Length: 89
Image (tube, rainbow, N blue to C red; front, side, top):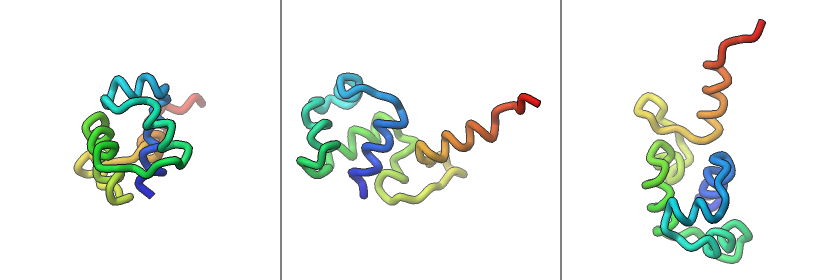
C-alpha cells in the first residue's frame, strides 16, 4: 500500500524520474524498479518522499488524512483546488 501511495505522489506531482532523483537523492533506476514492482518500498524511499512532500507524510504512512493540521493527499489537494476555484458561470 505504501508503494502505491509513493507512486501516486510521483504521478500527481507530474515528476519525471530524473526530477524525482534530484529531489530525493535516490537513483531514478530505483524509482523505476519500485514503480514496476521489481522492488519493495523501503525506509529510504518513505523518508525521502516525506521530506520532499511533508504535507503527505501522514497519508503516506497511514493512508489517513488530517487536513486540519495540513496533512493531506494528492487527491485531496486536487479536489480541494477544484472546490476553491471560482465558478465560470
